[in-house]
Image 1: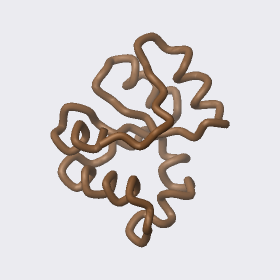
Image 2: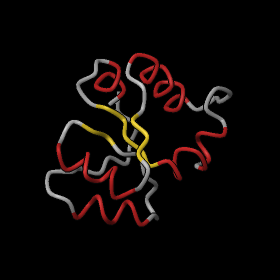
Image 3: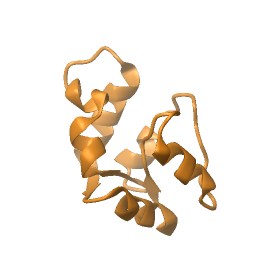
Image 4: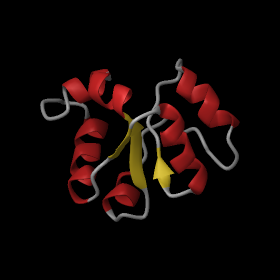
Length: 94
């Protein structure tokens, strides 16, 4: 996943509320979590697209070529699973 973002093949899209308030963004540059460090590196060459609303982020997902981060117990997870051609990965992929 990180290589797909870094190469520009996919873009990391996230709504502003989640981007500015999620726990992983509070520790973005000071973490021991490998997947956060890898994502941070990938976003250096292909910055995140931050949308105003979740619905706007989902509209990008439906176009293809976008990756939306979510946690398993959120509204966004259930909505994204119901969309066509989207897959849920529960393991870290490189």
